[in-house]
Each structure stands twice: as structure tokens, then as C-alpha cells.
Length: 160
Image 1 (cartoon, rainbow, N blue to C red):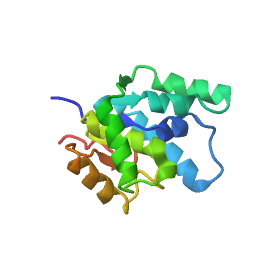
Image 2 (image 1 turned 60 degrees about the horizontal axis):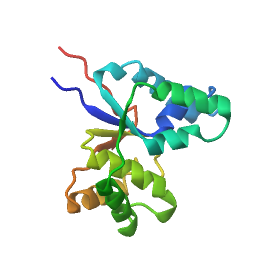
Image 3 (image 1 turned 45 degrees about the vertical axis):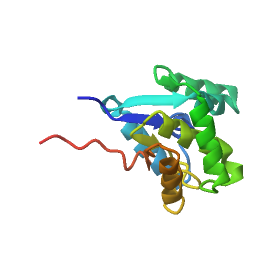
């Protein structure tokens, strides 16, 4: 049986590797992400060069931790279809212009047939208002949108 295919967006790497937050909501997200990470063997994990580029930014020590977590994940190839899909997401206003990198994440996941796009970016990606628009643009361009979710939602059910 094939494992579900998950595109791991940059916020997941960040939550896994950042110092514990004093903010209760962020601390809870970090904990949930760590718990999900411990069950990652139930999934096939993928990312893109866009994720790696974001992960390299900022403090060198923190970037090294993010990149270490990313090791072993399969890297999806940037394609003309993904580039066109990202542009379509922005042109249709499914995602705002300031979220161009988020459009790349969604496009890569859709074009490469990911089952899930895992993120904590609730401003632009895991957003209940934007999700239907994202799905519509993907379908209109011939691709099935992945299920966009947070680690809290992507829990493998125990088998009876």
C-alpha cells in the first residue's frame, strides 16, 4: 500500500527546530508538530527548492537545524507547469501578490500530485477562505489540489 504523499512546507521545518516558544499558541504548534514528526514514517515526505531556499534564510545555526531536518526528503523538480500554476494562483487572486512563495508551494504540491500540503501558514495557505479559491484554480488548470492542512489535522488513524 502506498503511503500518502506530503509536501512539507517551510513552517513545519521551522516549528520542528526552533527554540521552545513562550507564546502558548506557538508552543502548542511546536508540540503538535513534534508529535506529528514522530509518526512521519506513515507518509512519503517531499519538499522543493523553494522550501530549502526559505530554510537557508536567517540565523546560520537555525538554518542548519532546518536543513538537517529536511535531509532525506525527496526534492520535487521545478517545472514549467508548476511555474504556470503559481502564476495562475497569483493572477486569479487565489493568493495575494505578496504571497508569491506560497503560490510556489501550492503549485509544486498540486503539479506533483501530492495528497497533502502540510503547513502552519494559516495566513495564506491553510486558510479556510482561500482554500476553495486555490482548489478552483488548480482544477481549472488541470490539477487536483492537495489537501492543505496543519500537523494537527494530519493524524494517521490507528488500525483496529
